[in-house]
Length: 112
Image (cartoon, rainbow, N blue to C red; front, side, top):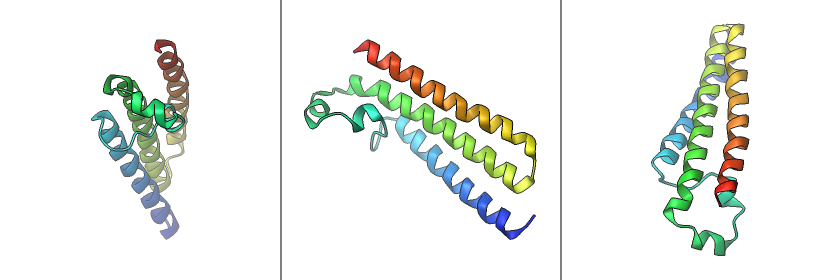
């Protein structure tokens, strides 16, 4: 294992820690709302949004950041240990995040 593997693994580990921290905040409905439904809303729509309207957006962001954090953690372990089989769980987590993000966006829009 070379120094570059350790550095890259540490970067991925830091990304995982950041994503998992954001996920925790999103699940607790604290902090900035990292969601396209909120980011693309007009200032008037944001003012009209009640807490119960934001709850599904926070939950969606929390799940996606949790999946991304687990992906970064899996990739960090793969880089440091050279276990190539960890590529498949990482790919599964990425696909899960994409599918969940699209499916939950459609579900949230249908409820409106």
